Amino acid sequence: MTQPMDDNTQTLRIFVLLFVNSFLIGAAVAIHKQGLWFPDEDNWLKVGGLFMMAATFVQMIAFMLYKVFFQERMEDQTYIQGLVTQSRRNMKKMNAELQRFQMSLEMEGRKRQFEKAMNKQKEAMENDDEIPPLISIEGMR
Image (cartoon, rainbow, N blue to C red; front, side, top):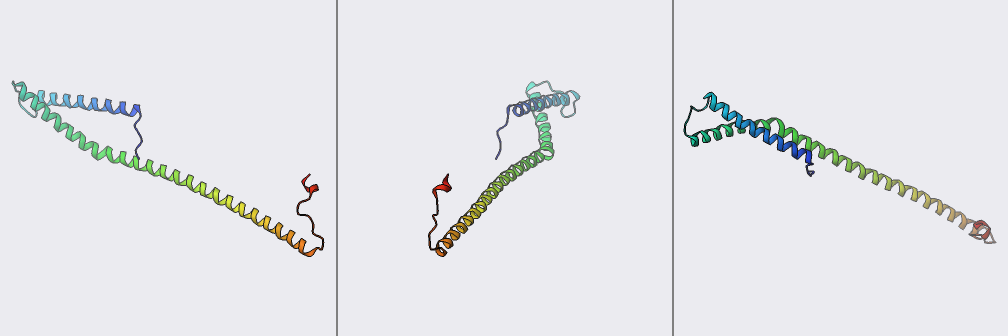
């Protein structure tokens, strides 16, 4: 499960995108100015196409670096967060089951105590000629 991004993360991504785009434009202009990739052209259509080619090349390199260095780390971090969340859920579930088990043990102990008291009363009734009252009015006061 992925959690929705908060506003700060989205704002940061927008600024990074704008920074990368300005870097690509600057790199294409610098390549053209230095004459490294293509010679001086007077036709603006050709210059625009060459700028786009240069920007695409730089963007491909930047995307490759992102894939190699950052995406795996982000996926690992997301995976680890998922594991931590799942382990917390499992711990809560185990705690609930443990509490339920402890309550059942307590109830079983109380049940045995009541059974012992009932058996004791039953034996007392069978042994005595006179039947003692199970619940007396004086015991209720």
